[in-house]
Image (cartoon, rainbow, N blue to C red; front, top):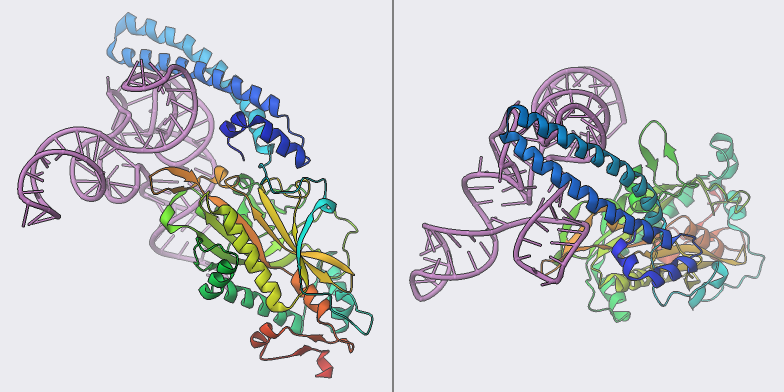
Length: 439
RNA sequence: GGUGAGAUGGCUGAGUGGUUGAAGGCGCUCGCUUGGAGUGCGAGUGUGGGAGUAAUCCCACCGAGGGUUCGAAUCCCUCUCUCACCGCCA
């Protein structure tokens, strides 16, 4: 959430950002409640001071005098209870409103309504040429018997799938490759220097296997309870994560880190669970959109000053991954209407899917300033001893989507799929995915 | 799942109803001491909110939430976590 002081001092900016993000939050009402809140709090504090004062005297008094004092303080107590009730009601509305105010956005973020207003910043590579009709990934994969959606729907329902055989091996190869890149200081330094971000650290990302269940209140504090898409575990006070971010972002909850130890960088791997309610009928075929998929995720904790550049570095590394896989993609800057409520800046990578004849999102990168850490008390101490909230960056390393891009961009006339060179070493040097009996 | 013990400031550790926001020790900061490091001596040393130009003052916080009481770190209830043992288990 935002700092109420910040909202108070930047009313116009906050109102504009909220509107640009297409959110409807009554900021004026919030400010009114804030004013009320402080007045009530003051009144309550004064009453409590009075109660404390009398109570201290009662300790020394005795007999009738004591009895009278106890009687008089009970009037104060009544008033306190009344004020507490009032303040409690007010706080409920105040907190709901404050929680709903989205983060402000970077001035460079394009103002727009939906994904149509996103801006393509660059393209890498070119669309592969085929002397045949390229298939969609599910067609290819079902024929190669490396993907089974039919059996999954029988066993688990719609939006589930089995990965089989070489597709499983390809998935693990891809994640292994991502972990190798993000833990390699030489690569990080190279990408960093190419982007002229030499003031940033070249520290590697620490591998992490985080929990896939998260306390509701923690998930809420980092603004990741998304009613329609969050799976709840009814018998516990837990939700399933829709991304490793949900348990990685709170990793430094209730801590005060030292500035000299920043950034703290992590790459985590987990299964992500999404209900995908409200997306009925959308992307029903194949493995574009499912209730469950595996993802390696980047999470970086930085100072306020370096958060923005950290995001650029992360995007650079995402591009490096795609380039190493030789996948044609474009880099997109997300507009205000399409970005998340916690985002200050967002970039996506969209890979070309020849079978679908479309660019589809494979990576996303969110810079959220201190919007998430305010709720979980994650601080750092500056060189001057000042306590400040950490800034968070969250981004995709690889999800299931790049697998789709590999299948579609690397498909061959005979229905086999060429394996990108950098992944072969993780697959015993194998060059093609073929139907099992063809090998 | 069962039983038992516990959770106090940066750390350690006292505190079972009345100036206890919290003894003592360690650490840290400043001053003196020293040629200098150390020792020694003295003072200070939590966070958040609010009022005030400021000095300063007020409120809240002893795992979290609620309750009893004029008054709670201390008593009661619920929850969370840690440790030990038993049971079960990848």
